[in-house]
Image (tube, rainbow, N blue to C red; front, side, top):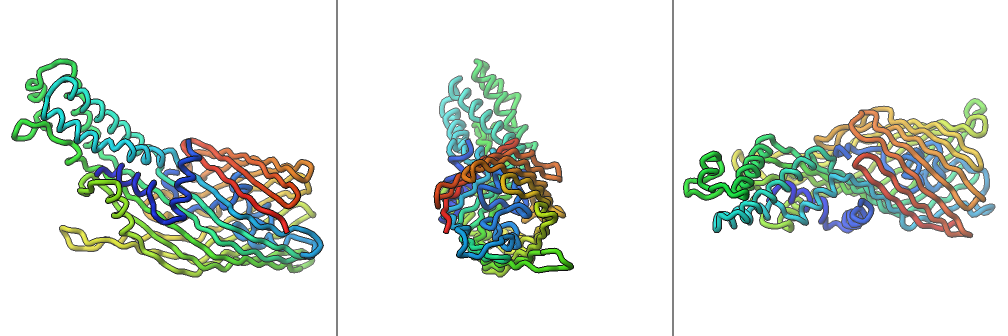
Length: 457
């Protein structure tokens, strides 16, 4: 089985229920280079506003982005219906490269090529040669696409309950974030070999004598005069990794006076269950089906329980201006995966996945009808495996109409220059106690969508 088939199987057929939900949604929404763990987008309002939420987020968003925001409230609980319940909140962000991998498993091009070679060896005709040429062309093009594209998914599903009070507040959430991707290592030798098959079989399909063509391409013929199956010698592979981070968190915040200035401080302690996966798939795995590839990836799963916390601080200046500083997952964690010993050396490889802390500063302007915010990662995030780091700048704006309709736009930029900019938009609507938010983001080969439904209390 090819690394494409294995990678697609591992990206598109997970058995963890939360993973399955998120990937199924991704298939509906898409018509990143594989990413390090970003600060994260956990709700539709933030997705629509480019990910900017640490300074301008609402109390309903505070548990995910900055717990200190829970304290920006000036009424007692019983004086207004400012509490929120969101059930569910769904976010899916997927690269086009991941969709290419999913398409690959559906097409099974490596299996098609093997079958075409066998058919040509049984009957070396122009039609069978044309079939080998066509499938080899499709496989070459797919390898080129995957080697140039990002293969990544970043999704979240959860529920959230928040209750602000006068100068303080609390929030509880349960959710799972799925971060998955792969780096395809496509060799120049494989490209050259497929080109030889395309050219040689193209000549046979055009009517040239198979014997004379074989004399020009002796490397494609075995000692019995048969066309060699190229899938047995291709060396390309893919490094695939995934984290399923399930969290139970409770955020709390309090506002204090410091030299006459109101300052809010918040913390979100949380219990984490982390399922870590990491595998290397190549053409020589001797896997006969998608299910076998999926099972091999699942065999690398290692489940960890860990404690972590998010911290935030924020202040409001001149009534409308906010400044915030937050740290997400303050305690660095390294998670091991299960690996089998190398059949030749006997050594067991160490393929760990790292979850590092991410610090972000936020600036914002918040008024009754208009909100504008900017978030900036203070440093490049540490890769969780072999992928490139990420450092985001997020800009978002919201305009409210008639207290019931919110229009939102956003922009997200990776400061490393390795990823395309994202443009996003969305709406929020409230009718009596019912609230709904929807968002869509797009940029380069990356797509994202979000939906959340809730009510006030």
